[in-house]
Length: 296
Length: 300
Image (cartoon, rainbow over all chains, first blue to last red):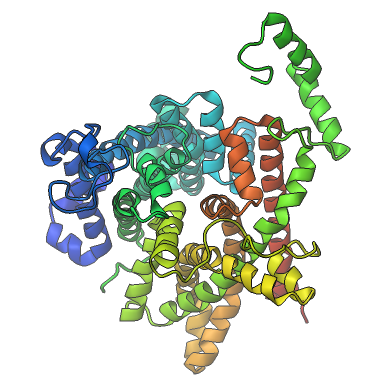
């Protein structure tokens, strides 16, 4: 679970973290995002210690208790502790978002490298897929596919990963196109390197900086998307402490005045998505030499 | 699924044959396209009504909400983004940057729920989230499909106020959701234009800040319109979720329900309309950009 803070900014993170004060000055957005995401990574890892109760333990005597007292954020319609459930929800957020983004990278980056370098038929197919994606909200596609293929955690991860993989392909492809005819690539080819070696050893390290900022943004997307799916009742089902599923449970109580069931998981969701978005924006600022860092 | 849980082998086989599912998949697809060209999208097994009729019945309600939010979102988003870009890194810019990022991160359905709670349950300002018009009012005759516009056209003020009241909260929630990415992108586009060589040249020529901004605005127009056009695609999901929360009874809510209940003909219709809608929006945006693009020379 701790991989959350590590996977997001790994290669640049290492370099920049050695100088964290300078980093905060150069991009406060990045620093703020890192703190928020790190906080949630901590929560998810130590959920069992931080949470006062088991997230699916039922207290039949105190169904729908308002926040305060023994139950810090109240209890839901089943008599489960909302605070413990919100904390445990961060586990679901990371355990869906991390593998699905890893899948996006595993498919998207090689695809972008190959299509960008080779062009041809595969490139055309990729471009058409990107056109289709542009005309269609990806979450609706994911929704329909998960609903049709079976509602398991694994399916949610795979579908979210597949649906957004072309984004990585697009970002990497664009970088490869500009690098393809540059001097160092030509000399690598002239020196007799195989195509595979040229692509993965010479081009790849130079082409993935744009994709790095995308990692954080895609994490934000994946957390949001999985919660949306669960809110609609697809994917992870109700007693499991998933934020989207909790909002779904709380939705019917919202009109009758039991606001705390849906409010708190939503706040957690907003915070973590905001954290990833700040992280992504900050990375974008830091990595883009054309843009002046904020605060200057 | 259709023949019910008690069906035996023969009955299932019978249903399969009547739906043409025993034929190869290419033939099934061919038949679907053939029917599509005749305007037949199949039947929804939930309601047993033709899918096309169901869509046409519900589409105006969604379009009403969509257009209203798009217009308000643009009216809020573009000037805010421009103003932030004119004075980068000042307080206003910092606030709008954070605000738009926050709007970016809020799940639509949760925001709608919280808004319902605050404005309906606590303050009693908003109408109940139970559809497009009050139960006590007769809906107006169908002219444009928008209850509010129709009741105004027929002079039915009671219905108009009820419809407007019901429309208000979903429209405000939706506009806020829509304006966040527009603010962000407008700011980025305008900043890029303001930092470009021709703007620097204009400054060097001694033009005042007002004129310089007008030049930059002219250049930013095409990318901003293109972005708003591509935003409508993501708005399609948001409109579905908002309809879901407010029981709007529109096309989006119907489509989500079709997905949830595995109503395949309806899902196909839903997806088809979404894709067609986006295609038309992109075409419209491209034409609009061409019209206003100084280099195309169409607008002399």
